[in-house]
Image (tube, rainbow, N blue to C red; front, top):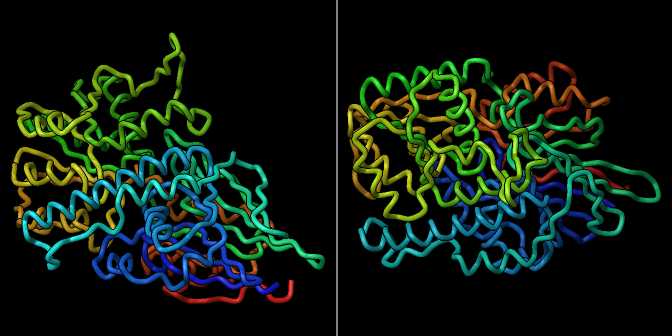
Length: 466
């Protein structure tokens, strides 16, 4: 058996994760993500996939962020009929994430048509809610640490990666009469001292390793998070402004709720209303109560109801458009947490459209903003940004807090890599912008690791004759 790897995404970028394994005329795809951020990357979503989807036997998913699952509806639409394997929590999240992504795509296409700012006479979404419904019956979810047979001589196992609910490190084992080989995909690794998530599980052996490098060139200390948050919130209150936080609906929103709850309980910030304005975040928060084994937040059962900090009286869930629009009229300090985290779409755009031009308000970035994204441009201090086809002046306070990232920083990546008892034959550094990936590669090369930073569409012969 000869095994080849083809890099179909997340090569010197943090989006579009797709890794194709080919062997004995069979194909397995690990992750199936959407490209986001720079236009040249987003355009890849519309290009023909370099492999016929109908020839792929199985898709294995590390976790439910859109840059890891967002291309699934298109894959199925174009002919994929195999199984999609993931953890139980990832399956639950996937339903919410894909349906929300489809709805956003349809709404944005319709909005572009009405406003006339698309170059197409009738803008079409990449996929629809109907396309998502074709994906869900193909999903087969499993528990952590259970061996799952994929094909003859090939099995998979999922280990907790600590990144978000259900996120996993994937270990693929190839067995033959001659030998056994392991290919490990780190997925996105979480933090060792995360407030909510458990640390990533240690993996001790891999013949081939693919490891993410989102923060391969930087440190994100967590010890100042609550000090920094309290300072930013208290400053915003002195301006009598509203704090708008673009946040991923999965993970980041729940972590922010936790920290704001802690700071209010400790009286380090005033008790402010916290508006969660993301239908997806509301649904996801319910899953955190259902999958309590996967995180540290205390969940109790009262009269057949699950109760946690998410049921605090300070928290208000905006369940419809009217609730969301009413936030435009807020005159007193409040916190609005809304998706998407990189300001690529969703209700956050409406809040920024109204709030960016207000000198008293604050936009707080609580997570990574990809190169070329609207969030990165605001973060970098550009005086104008385009929203809904209109140039909007940025006059509000713009703040960033880094320690909240759900990604391991450089130190934590190296800590996780130190668990391997022997160096893998080759380690591919993926899911990081060029400087992040190459910096981590150099760190590993200094320890005599064979570290490679692949390019988009590169193909590698992993094993021959096993």
